[in-house]
Length: 121
Image (tube, rainbow, N blue to C red; front, side, top):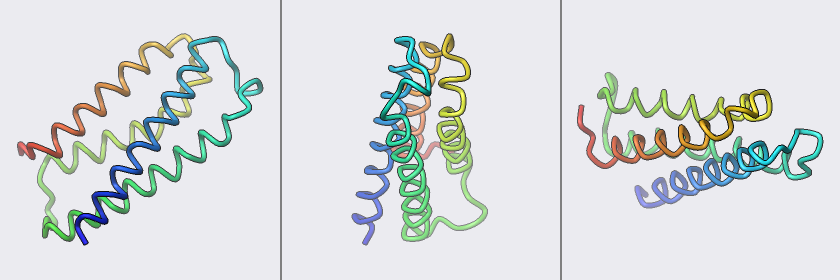
């Protein structure tokens, strides 16, 4: 059962990063909400990815018997995923920040992966 949770967790993560990458790429190249015909599909993919990732992540915590109070790395990961969930609101509102958002998304993803693999605190 843990493998099923991991599968959906990784699928959700892939959906999040694919949609953010596409939206940020479009904004960096001067695209607008009105011009991007795939914006709604990318946004829906992002939303479904967030839900899959969160539900399966909490399912994995339960399977691994990590109960309240959660360790610190769980709280940091939740904050990271909240930030990644809200970044879509900034992409077209701040197109000049597109390049910075690109790197922020990569850094946050790397930090989340590090925390999941090492569980440092």
